[in-house]
Length: 522
Image (cartoon, rainbow, N blue to C red; front, side):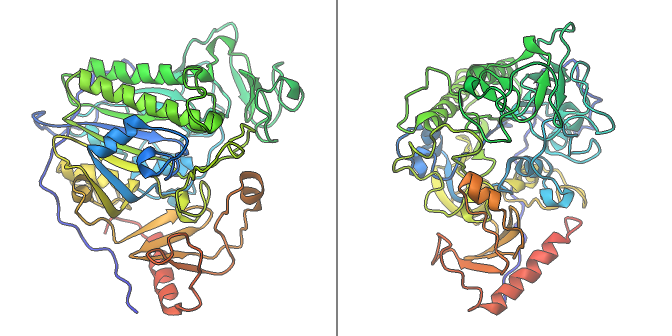
């Protein structure tokens, strides 16, 4: 049986995008630019939610929680039913979105809080590509792609380079890693915000430093009990991964995230309402620790996980409202999506499992975050662009990794042969609910899977990843034998038909190996 390979998609008529933001005082050397007119060019906003599952949004079937702002985007845009993050964990997905290549090519996995940046300063990136046509770009929120070059430990009391500014962003306001990792401080451009030089900040991931209490020494001080990974330095009553000393004046308060990040995003929009702009809004919600502000507490029936979804929806609405207030919403291309599938127990006891009720975070799909099964990467995805997009529902096979090449096509930028090698031009499918998407895509977890048509092949793996099952309550999807599922007949991946279809297994195995060994766009 012959398995179809990827066909070339004709280029869409050019919709040039150009952004001209207020320059940042710490902006690196200017990118080589391509002259282009700003006339009728849309702003671009990517809402990148953390750990939001396919079923965690109202229009995707959520129960016990309401998401009116996201539902409104879907009603007035394209709601995708088969769209995917490139990986089932956060660092690899972010890497792929910004570089247009799979994270396994760089052996990229979930990073420690003091890890070196995994995107090299010489590497092509989405923001660098946008800069070629006059874009100025911003990232607000969770980073988790590393900082510094790894030649020495990060000095949190000095300028921290390289970082987002060195890979094409003109402004950044970040959680340096994640909410559950130290340092628990904001990083604006190259510097920790509000840091007192008389109380220098230090971080260690190997041994305790400083005199702050820890979760393992003082469990009575924990607001949420934590596993052994998350019970180190206590900040705001929550144990974190790693130890932190000093930097007291710079500490964040988790419950303030909703307003701090919203304000930064909206200030950015206000300052640049007269010029096209690009904003990468990278949420902390609904990642652990889940500590929604009191104004959202009790707004769902699912405890803090549900309330964090309500908070995330509110933030989305506030940013969209600001776009409308500034008169630019109709001409703004919004992509709303998630970095990977859902997880309930991810290190803290916050009753996410006990209070779940009838809600299904992954919808009908098997697995979740970390998993090779569909719920690991199939995530809610919405395209909203009133000036160009007709509302609808699309069942096209889509991947976030294609944002890079699709935007390049809209801008009429020809990518080099070694740039964004896994990214395809799917601009027609992003903008038209009736258009076809990919014919195949790779799903990355603790093993690799290949989607092609109705078939899904999961490569065999000896790595059972029992900790995912035992600690997270999620099936990792790894088995020592190959797995094959027909998702049209078996969307829940309940019936492995590999033994009955050896020719399909062999064809997909061969194709996956070809894609793994790919080294250029052609």
